[in-house]
Length: 634
Image 1 (cartoon, rainbow, N blue to C red):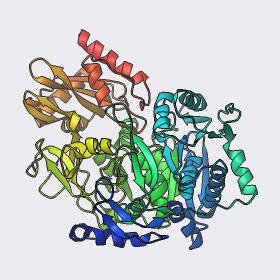
Image 2 (image 1 turned 60 degrees about the horizontal axis):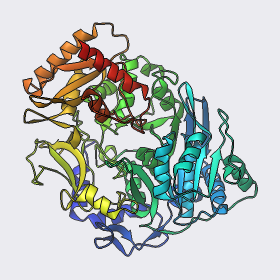
Image 3 (image 1 turned 90 degrees about the horizontal axis):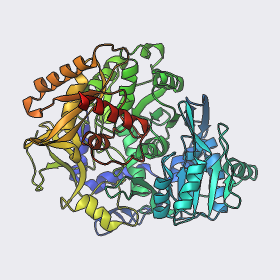
Image 4 (image 1 turned 135 degrees about the vertical axis):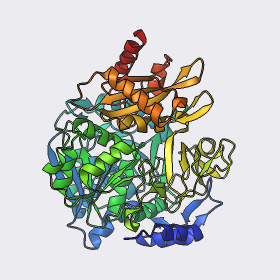
């Protein structure tokens, strides 16, 4: 099948407002818009101004009313606890209405903020949708975030109420949430009126009298009473949620997502970009605390009438490197969306892909990777072992859905390893030099998006318009700054090489650490790798590589390190000045799978560093420091 991509992208370019007005026909509106796009409204303009809608109605109620009541809406699969719970659209509505009634009884209404601080349990999704039903604004904080991080978000969002749980589960350990929640409220200047607490069987907690309410008991009472909560009309431009992303000053940035444009854009992506139809099963192996969880566990699949899988577990160790294939086979998953780091972990534990043929993957069509750069070697490994298309794509917390992709629903374009595809409708992607001038095709520069951003992207930061302008719009007037460095080739494919902070200057040569990582990953014994720039008296900066070896490799690490250095010299040249490669047991990562390169760089440079709030396992940083000390002593 030939791709319709170029035709569809050209349609958007010719008349963006007509394009999005047509896409908006898939959404149920309480009141139609006065203007599709108003350039005078807000920081750079707003979409669907004057319209009224409700996101929860579009995600649940309309499907119940139109023949999908008995279709599965949500499958919760906990590989850690060993349970599977399934909810039809009718059952999902019942749970969401019960929780919305609990919230309403506690005074939560339109425009109020509710923080959701929960593990990967169905109640986290219920809480998001219950807020949307009431017109309240939810802010999901990744479960297990340290108390101080939660406190800063409480003070910024000023929630009326917090929904939380007694504990979260990780492989081999239980994380108590209640002490973190109590500590955060104690630190915060703003005090929420109530906390709804889900008591999990694995570890219950003491409730604070007068403040805390048992969530399950309260919901059970509302269900028994036959609670009914209508969907509250909100403006399309009203906030649906605030999602905090890290800021350079240490103060998190509250990315705001609106109701109307968000629904239009996400619904469009499910069929056109991900190629998943109503009634099919879609699995985003992320966490509801991250943007992928918001967009592709909760909202997009439900808006499109699909079945969404919500997974509590890890790609390896729960119990083995076949976990993902078990979930796909058991639930009939058509498309999986996960981070490249998950596949590097699977590849590292099962380099031969021995687990793949043990499962029936006949319904599985496509693997989508995003969240960080997908190195070509991992991508090729997945293609080879699965025998399915593997699609790398690129976006940000701020955009809410893919900037570039290979649109399966429009007919796939040829895959270029190392590229996250081509710009999607709505995104006019350019590459500029530091002075703001366009660079030639194939040249490295600053990746930017011409304003206005499409529907569904952030229209502002929470209560911080000037910070929004300063962080994203000031450096390149007329453009949104992605803070990523990359290039666009002659065929229009984007290649993201690094965050702009990760471009290193070696003796006057601007080199991409991402390009070097691609070379390190080519070595047959390397499972994972990272490259950072460290200070050098002569050249300003030189690269330092870190490699994790595949399971079962028993060669001398020093020999492998020499081979890797030689490989970089061969592929990139002596200009890279790659002389130092260190073998480590693990790489430090955030809980969403991003490698903490900036912290590794500080450790390698003997600079002061602080423990990142999002780190998955703090012990890994000491392992990195120890490996470097061992190398320095030699």
